[in-house]
Length: 501
Image (cartoon, rainbow, N blue to C red; front, side, top):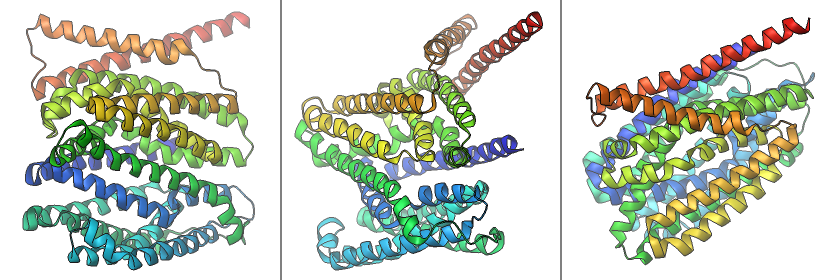
């Protein structure tokens, strides 16, 4: 029953995320065509700044409430509603503190970064968005922990649609005149509607718990602080890295507009395209946090090992195939998404590190679900120190190649460290041949087989339709190899069992 629920939630979240990610790529392409690549660079920098303000004001509320409520549900006297209200109280305190800073600093921030006196008004509106977003995150964590992920998925979809509508309408109306205003207005609209939806859902679908609860507000804060600290640290480092990239590109010799355009293409076209195939893993990650937290609370080490082993194996099988597809079709994908030949070249250049990037999604979910926030924070710190150091040293010398190098070095180091930590903690054995060598071989040989087929029938793989056909045949062959391998392995195990008996 539990496995069926996990599969059902994962499928639903994946479908919703596929739709949202597709819509996001279309929206980014629209902004690039309407306002230029430099505008999408400004959007990306603004998004990084507002994301930092958001994570500080909500204290990584989704993850905190999701994990702590999951543990509460496994206790005899647990009360998830009480934990939710602890989270809301903490987020309210954090949001008010951040809001006070923004109101006090509204004038210098507005004049310097948001376009003058009009920007001062925009900064003063931000606290409203931050408070709404923080409380909404608490409710989302609550429903995720209660295995009602569909509520979160549909709310996220509505939030994105509201933001997209505001961006499209204001872009058509204002054009390049108020890029910052468009971004802030879209976030305010999305957060307010998201909170309203969550309040309505909670009033109708909350769990009626008779327990008094097992932790106080003070205990909740003490448990949440490591999770909050890790999220804030990651956001600060990510924002710092994002701010440095255009600056270092200017040192390489690009103009301000060229630097913003290159950064915009990378952040709004390349990164979304790289992460697009990971939607199933992103959908699964929230469920992994809750399931691993429950397994740990129940002391089920066997369950933890089973989850870890399967996740590592299937993530690498999937990630290696996705990497091969992006290497093969990176250039046409970049052009289709609005990034041009440059965007396509970037996608192909980053694609080989995709398996490591995808591993981070599931490994971090397991690590946080099992309460290893201390390791997570230290590892993120080391990862971003590597990334930022390479950006500072390499980008002024070799341009985009330095950005690619920073992604390779930081992702390979950080995710090897995560893998080693998780394997040692759970006692799971890493099987190099079945988890790495086999997927690489299967991806290469099945791709070669499809290439040969296209040559035999004198078909081109350059058009959109032919790319889709190529991909479908390739996916069937790759998946078929693993299905056949699984069947043969199962038969072999049955024969051994019969012989032993």
